[in-house]
Length: 202
Image 1 (tube, rainbow, N blue to C red):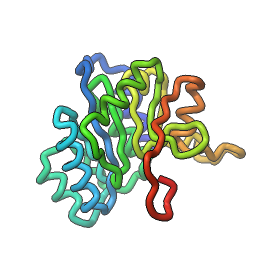
Image 2 (cartoon, helix red, strand yellow):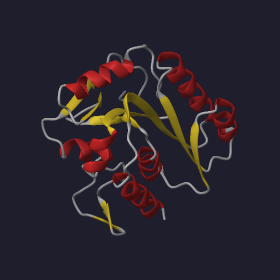
Image 3 (cartoon, rainbow, N blue to C red):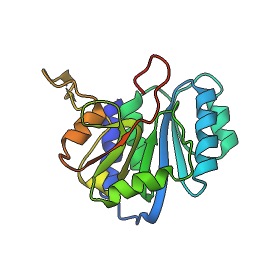
C-alpha cells in the first residue's frame, strides 16, 4: 500500500503543470510519535528560515504530534496508517510547490540563519543533490536538498531502491540517499559535519 500510494503521487507530480514558486524552499519532514522533536523542528525552521514553507507527513501518530501540527498551522498530510519513512517522504516531495525542497529528519533542526543559502549555493554549482556527509560519498537525508523539478523529472525516490516488486534485490541494500547520490556521480554536494556528540555518527 505504501509504495503504491507514493508511486501514484510521484506520477501525478511529474506530470503536473502547476508552476513552482521560484527561489523558494519547502522543508519536509516525516513524523511518527515524536511530538517533542517535531515541535522543536518547526520552531527552528520558522526562526531561521521564516520564508520557507513546511510540510509534515504524520505516520499515524498516537501521541500529541497531531495536536502539535494543528497548533503550528503548517501544511500537513495525516496518514491513517504508518507507511514508513521513505513512502511518506515521497508523498511530501510530491506536494512541494516551490523550486527547491530540503528534508530534515524529525530530530534534526537548523541552528543558523543561512542554512538554506548554504544548500542553495551547492545546488547552484551544478549539483543535483546536496546534504550532510556522514560517510562514503553520499548526501545523508537527515539534511538533504534538491531542486523539486530534478527530483521529479529524474525519477528519484526516498523509498529503498533494493525493494522492487515486493522482493529485495540481492546485493542491493543501499541507504536510499546513497542510491540517489550514486545515480548522480560527480553532482553531489557534501556538507561536512562540524561537531559530533554522543554515540551516534552525526
